[in-house]
Amino acid sequence: MKLVFEKSMPGHASVILPPLDVEKKALPENLSRGRLPRLPELSETEVSRHYTELVHEVYGVNSGFYPLGSCTMKYNPRIDEEIAALPSFTGIHPLAPQEATEGCRKVLEEAADLLEEISGMDAMTFQPAAGAHGEFTGVLLIKQYHDARGDEKRRKIIVPDSAHGTNPATAAMCGYEVVNIASAPDGCVDLDALKAALGEDTAGLMLTNPNTVGLFDPNILEITRLVHEAGGLCYYDGANLNAIMGHVRPGDMGFDCVHMNLHKTFATPHGGGGPGAGAVGCKAFLAPYLPKSALMDGGEGIQVRGFAGNFLVVLKALTYILTLGKEGIPQASETAVLNANYLMKGVKEVFTPAFDRICMHEFVLDLSDYKKATGVSALDVAKRLIDYGIHPPTMYFPLIVHEALMLEPTETESRETLDQVAEIFRKVKEDGIREPELLHTAPHNATIGRPDEVAAARNPILKAEL
Amino acid sequence: MEHLDYQFSRSHEWLKEEDGLMIVGISDFAQNALGDVVFVNLPDVGDEVTAGEAFGDVESVKAVSDLISPVTGVVAEVNEELLDSPELLNSDPYGSWIIKVENVTDTEELLSAAAYEAFCETEE
Image 1 (tube, rainbow over the protein chains, first blue to last red):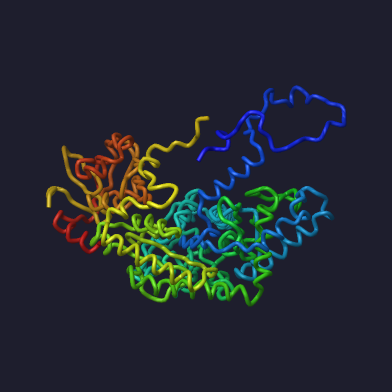
Image 2 (image 1 turned 90 degrees about the vertical axis):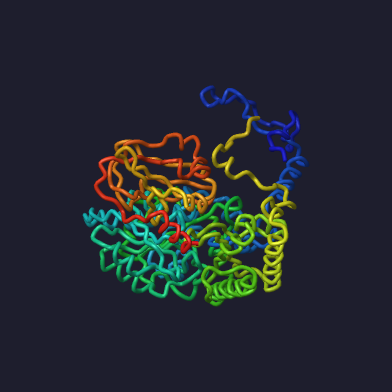
């Protein structure tokens, strides 16, 4: 499809301005651009058609099944959008006088109270704009803690090899050396490897629990105890919080700080529908190092983003929590776990799970045997799933599983949908056995066929020539 | 099995001695598991490398993976051709060396070609 700039026609417009009823004045010379901004000119019909065309080009949670593992692509309830669209929230400015922003402050306080309760933390910041930003903020808290104690020999952050790529990236961005430890054969933390890695130079451990293969680490209390004993702190990556919210709290597992992806667990939109929010919580002893907004909170403090972060996202998450309530929050995670196990049972008849035991909110398939037999890879299978109208799962992650497909159905899918999905996996598998080439070249029914990923990575074209 | 004069690490790098230098590359198994390589990050000449630790990384369409040095020593040469043509690691893994190391003081426990082949079968 054409870009909106390419559709532009001189003179087309969507707005009829009212007649000027005041004296016309030119902008002062120093404030003028000197030329008109280069904006597309389109009629309202053309704009409407453009965006409708875009809608047909994309696939989202409103289009169909979206099992992107570790991303928690759950449905974003309409009521959250309705509340966040109220003019009393959208029309406010953070620099408005305090008496005019009481309601918004109350939203932030209440959201903090509830998320502290869910995570088992004592204090919270909403400044981080997304998950990786939250990780960065959280690890800076750890760094600040050691620095404030003059404990400068702690230069290493331990990260298991099943971690999200953002964990080692975060540790490196904070100036730490990353120590990767291998997982045990059951996919969980190898305690011996952890003990060997711990020492006087350990600043902390970054961990997701349940981990990226969808398993809850049974040794979690021992893990956090060992790290604390060595003088390190424990960081909880909240990517998989949807599996346990309302049941187990990272704070009770021994973690000192945590980030929560409001755009995952608390049902605010991802990506283009976002922005996101990576709320960071911590225990009381780390609270003095939390970022603050000098303008809103007074005093001094570091900021990782302006004011209170993405306020309307926090408001949507608060609406979600209050709508589900004390009973609904744990029920949502129970259903997420139930759905993942139900789907694993259905798909297990088709492809081999990497770890064949009861899972949490997500599970990983290992297609190595299938690839050996047919030449059809996990990537080919993922592309063929598009032909059947569902979004592919996460591919080739975690790295500890070869030919991995990682599925997270979330709690908002029905049993009927999960049955259909298992059936689609069966059809795709049979397609690959019957006609491997069909899968090597899939998708065939999508607007965009198979992009040349190698060419795109080696020679990316990042701007349009207009 | 070709390349009988190569030795292999369990992290899938190969090592070969030539003109007093230790040459390091990645195995055919490694390039096959990585998929199409799109970028290679190389150390500089003169950098120290440590046996068992990363000296660079390769990025494929699937993931970024560390390159683990089988030896401790100093980088004498880097194969800059890989910066423009990373696909050489896929098309000719045993002909495409990555670094040459001098002043080698330590070497990881390495596998012979036959032992490595057996090791790869357990990896699959």
